[in-house]
Length: 307
Ligand code: GYE
Image (cartoon, rainbow, N blue to C red):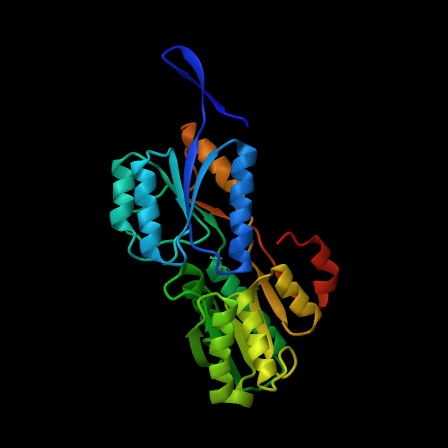
């Protein structure tokens, strides 16, 4: 492995960087790909990685961050489960002089000096992209267009922003109505369970399922089929991430559009870690490049998908 060469007291010595990474969990295909990306990139960069899985619980993540502080790692990175409640532990990191990088999800703190940079997607823009697709899809339809929303983890940045981005676009067009909205916690099982309840209560009234990720969309598709509904035709399905599973569902005609969100953040994270240790200043925000995939391009694009 490559190691950084530092000159200390006139002696050149190899000093390996240690990074403590506190992951959200393993709730989705996106997350699994993100974990692989982080682990592989650390290896390629010669960075010693300490990795923890919080099983979608903020308290576990806080505990992991505290242990990284106690172990005096060089840099801490984490993908915050939810947006709020981070000040105390981040102040502890700051006091210990350990820089913190946010990956994937943003946090809500007044004191922006509590983190150095945030590497990840613009979830608000993703929600707007989905909203624009809906406007275009239904432009010749007077409505009403009833939307059932499967939200991600309550209080998480992607759930908050994918909802807000959609609202920004459809709020001035009264034909669009969100008739039901509930969290499926970004999991397939959660999406299926919530959709079963929606199907019972609203049945044929639902025109669109707006799922905050592919895993929940796939679960919802199962639930709709079991309830005798036709996802992709009778009910349009809008999803996020654009995983291989999402692409396969598009090819099968069951997801209508998938807004891309890339989990492949490992290489960018490792170069940010190296820059920090080398004393460079990072931009406060590093945005991932992404696009939108409508169903009709899925078969052609799937072979080149990496997650
Ligand atoms: O969309 C979802 C995952 O934070 C962007 O988390 C990420 C989201 C992603 O569970 O599949």
